[in-house]
Image (cartoon, rainbow, N blue to C red; front, side, top):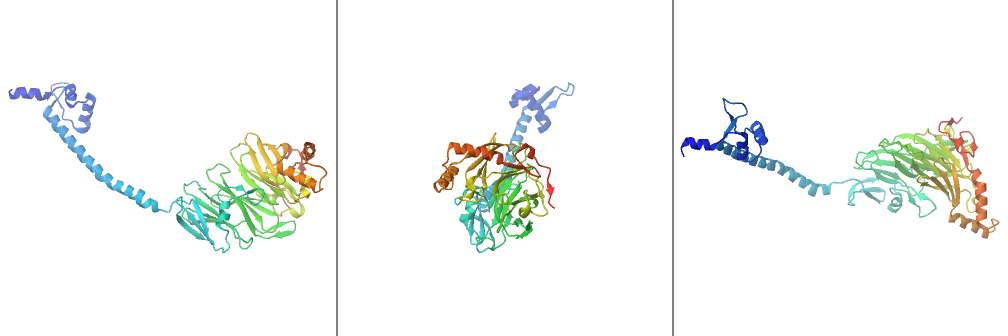
Length: 444
């Protein structure tokens, strides 16, 4: 074969022939020409579409391309190797020894010791209180409310670990509580995940009810953390009792510990929670307990943006300088003949939400008042506890008859109209007329 015949055999004269030689499609060859300098030539005296290429040129191009890809692979390897090594070091050597996020705790004398999920200490804080409550006490009031082991009703958290500002870092809300009531001022401290104090809150203040001034010493009953107004930032509900007498303070703090609003009640609050009663997206604050002026159990519903003020009171129980009637609804529950027997008052100690129907309010004696979500009374029931107390009173000669369906029917008939609603000025038995969200009156 002469040189001319060999040259003719080594030349490819169309995109189709070039693509066949390279074992790819025509479009790929055209892209390689533009992006990777594929050695393709055009006939000078022909249209632009007529191309040719030499096999030896294509072979050389393929070899250079393979060498370039090999170099790039090594370049990526040398780049990624240190990154992979650093990742390995971080994951297996450094991260296991990092402090981590607050998860659990222990109490050692006067010190709060914060632990991560592996029960390793990440920081500690000395409260300076020699008689700080022990770990068992705080463990029983950690994170959520629960049934009390010592009395009828619930106990509320004094220690909560939660991300209260939604920054993916957990804060610790801790109430410093001494064993001896009133030995030192109680306070709520918010720690960041590293143990640095973000803010603190001291409950209560000196208050005047009637003509009597009460001390500023308050004991925190418990906490609740809720996003009341659905703004992706938590509010902190703090309920505190005066250590000597009846005033109770309910405050709403923002996530930075700033006081947003406060509510003063003349009588202990036994139960508190938050629930969207009217399904408007914002959660109402539900309170129950005992109103000392009227010696009755109560239910109060506060709007999330309620105006600071107090429960509706008169005379000795009336706080000075505060608005009254600021509740969305305030209800007094009736007493029965049992109220004068084993105990003087019958506080409402627990609220149960009945999804799709309403709520029920349970008293210490075992009376259960069922309301719809408009807070209209629908039913009165009697728990076994009430029946037992009634029969015990009968055996002791303190009531005329044993508990029976007839006694139950008579009690219902008497108790229904004695459920009273505050309308901003007076007590009435019509719940619809007691809607009172904007008629607060300032005390003189």
